[in-house]
Image (cartoon, rainbow over all chains, first blue to last red; front, side, top):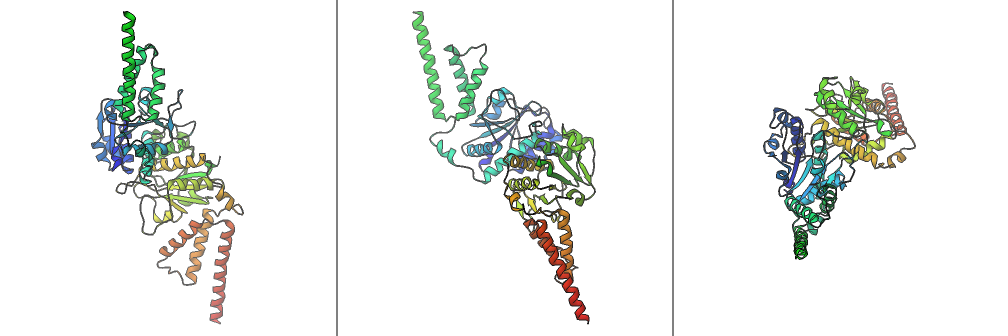
Length: 250
Length: 250
């Protein structure tokens, strides 16, 4: 079943009780693949107590040292956020997020990220996301309990799975598989390097520009062929520049 | 704001932590009216700990000795259930339930009921409900944590509130206000009495028939005028029978 391609990733969770409650919320909605990035306290009896019959999800949880590990092979990454941010990430409601994840899961692994209880996802973590899912909430009291946030998204994923979701995304990228998270990270490093070499990007203050570019390309959801073309262009730009430098020195 | 007409009613909650988490889940979705029917352990520091900033919802919670107290003045009652039952109650998904509650709240108090953690709502409690909301879940692991179930319904209510919901129900009953829960209970007692008097209902085994009738009339959502007509019919039936008995004795 393609729901097994959906990873629920908790980034640096602080309270083991929330990890256990997350396992239960997932299993209630037929999701079983939990990834924990640098959990503060795990395994823990608090987690097992709150899992109530979802112990198998906890036992099979993949413990990762870094977000890179958790996102390995994923071609679609959606982060969750309650906060309004200065530069807006492309934002989706839970229902649309769920449909994208279910559609994407038919092609390979996808990930849904939840940040630490107190801080949420950091900007550097959101940069890894193609989209940000925002749960509509009370304007003055918008921060949900971690497991409750997982429950709402898992509920929407379950519903999207039941409804069969749309096959349109699958069709549209049939020509080639979507680029993986690793491919995207390599592409961004290549892009940053090339932009510095041509003097467009100031290495002293690269983040703002790169963030905007990442958001742009993440939103597009590149397939591997498009990715190769872009990497080819970057390489061509770099080679041209080397030639130009060489000519300049002669 | 009409959301203040929506009561979240926890019936005999066992774990104070769940009561606190429920308060938070409600406040996240702009719901503030919590009713607790015979809570096992409240107030409690466990509840306050898990409420995290929703202490006001806990402090203003209405503690009731009976379900009657909690449903006083309510004209629409929706219960929640994970279980499939022998005789089906009229069942709605969370989204439809939320729309009915939001529509109903524009006319007066409405209630959403959650049963005890281990047992859920009892049949006698479901008999008080116009509809039962069922959260779609994994076939083999369908029992959600109490606060997580509240979170999903509260989320759907919040969404229904944002979308403005439909005004159709309001229009359709504009001629008269819907019957209250007390009116309905009086009607059912009257009906049961009358059915026994005419020998249609066996007092030794009344529940199954009455349950079916309650489900029927609950689903209709009677307005006060219709209620008065039905009560009038029952009274007429009873008077006719008395006269008939009298004639018989002469």
